[in-house]
Amino acid sequence: QVQLVESGGGLVQAGGSLTLSCAASGTIFSINVMGWYRQAPGKQRELVASISSGNSTNYANSVKGRFTISRDNAKNTVYLQMNSLKPEDTADYYCNLNWWARNYWGQGTQVTVSS
Image (cartoon, rainbow, N blue to C red):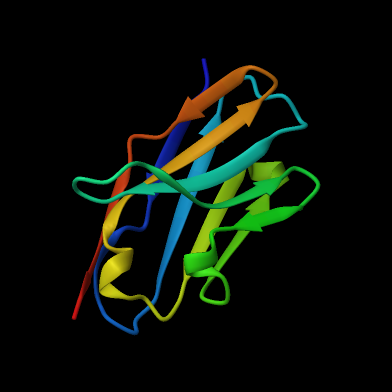
């Protein structure tokens, strides 16, 4: 059974920074993609950023230049460094791990950016 445990959410003022972490445990295929999604109240869940086990990255246009995703394959951990945060970044952030037809989600961590 694969488990994803997120940490690092919280309340921050606009312009501030936060770093989210997500540690995966269990039987994990070495070739995979880890990512962060977010869901604001009343909106659909959207991709924020993803990174493959080969370190290929993908970002939503809204966070390019402000957020950086990285991973530590030895620890099965993915990070999301969020800088220059805006009130519109306020959402629940979810970690995702997937390979082939397997798709796993964390429990979510709340990020609130005050103006």
